[in-house]
Image (spheres, helix red, strand yellow):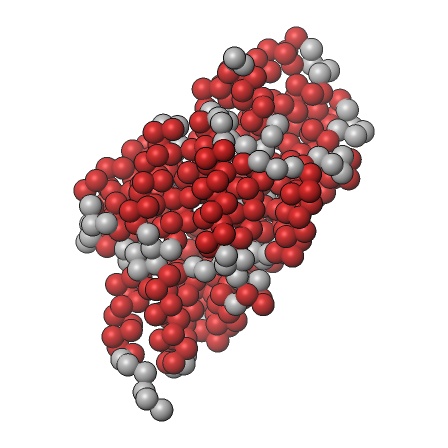
Length: 417
């Protein structure tokens, strides 16, 4: 049987999640290799990829500058036809949410080795982050020509989810989880299956997937946060709080802190919520120090709980740099919260209308659009989008679901004419 370093090497070079204990062994081994032979470009590239995966899995951005130094050292040693380093820099950019850089390095890796399937897998994420869904679709087509298996199914599920094909996405990710052999990879796909189930309001199925992911890989903290989300939706609030706290203790991700803070706030526990919001701000600062972009989470937080004008400034910059669907939704909401509803509606349409790129069926996006339309006195459209949000997922947010229900009651029934 392969040892932990070989298992981790197989994972990081195949663009799939690696187990944290195996990653630690691989990092130690490659650090020893480059100390013994500083001119080993391949080992520097592998070390950079391992640092990236460690940073991504632990939500510790301190690993990202180390990854950058290792990968650029590999490029300095072997500046020509070094697809390993180029792909490593693309993966690092994806982990940092720097999608323009991810696109650039992914395309470099693809030009160097056109049949390198992992470069196409990374380009799907880069193009999606930039709002170029047609390019993401073309990369998926090329990927499926070059490769099959669970990693490709997982990418296809992500693209189908963004196109609004939720049933196809759910089937593909379930198949990917069933076929994955490595526990860390299988757990990652189970966590995504749980996300998809929760997005369509299926709390029990989501909880089952999240729990199965944790049993498969106890270090799968995104699944633990998902478990907290599902438990809260089921009304098992005490358990949900404990699970969220456990996830944040091991992986203090800003998005998890925002979710837990909003759960506390929905329960009237404002002091506990402020603790999580302070953690969110601290983690965003640490991410920025490591070159990671958490402006999207910070913008949503500021729009709802801080300074909406600051949220607009941050998210405008983000939109200019990488105009993805999630950024369009967040910017539209921040503009609404800042009182700029006419402009806000344009971004909300971009996030929710398929012909503008927003094909994903998101309860939060529909809620945001409905509330903007209500403020603009477009009552019919507002009623329709608020109802759609609650149809898609009646449990999408402990704070916003009650607000959506109140808004619908205030709007009343649609007039017969």
